[in-house]
Image (cartoon, rainbow, N blue to C red; front, side, top):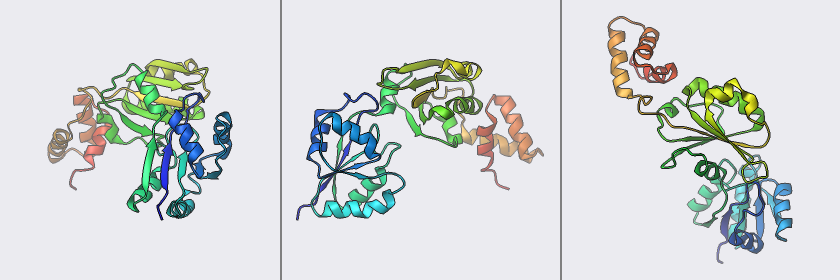
Length: 269
């Protein structure tokens, strides 16, 4: 028996017209649609008169559902995976299922479409030769300090003010673009530097989902880890404590403390 195909279908991130003919046809032809929230997906299906039955597939049940999904594919059924908005597998359920399906020989087909990070980046005015997608982030990694291409984050409205403060504390005062309500009626791009929005948070209307694009590190901000490590070793051998050595190098080279401290962890005891 021929195995079924797993289709990853990108859906609109706001404006319901942002869906391809191919995506609509795929949803119509599938035996089942695996939806993150059937209520949200139901509005899209109603708009395009799609009668395909839905099954719930989200981060809280996906581990239990994965084996059932593979069983359905094994029986020859075609399944379409959708998230509430955008491309499934990008900060939404789907990646684990895809990896599992691929490892067991099932065909996986991606139906391209809307993606919030790309939509925001191309209209940001920041360099697009490359980017580093972080997504939702509760903790900032010190390695991000040396990334020289734009960093892209997702953030919720109730956390956006504190998140921008956190970015300024961690990265310093860099250029930033905050995109709100992408593709919707009140789509807005806020452009400036972090300090502007930290000092005047009322500039940003706190409503809707946000994409935050932070400019990458300049050549002066990029830390040569090996050079820093050698300087740290020399200072510690000269009698300074690790803490004193870190502080001294930060002053000498105008570097952020957390970047130098992260490198100091590599010092031998």
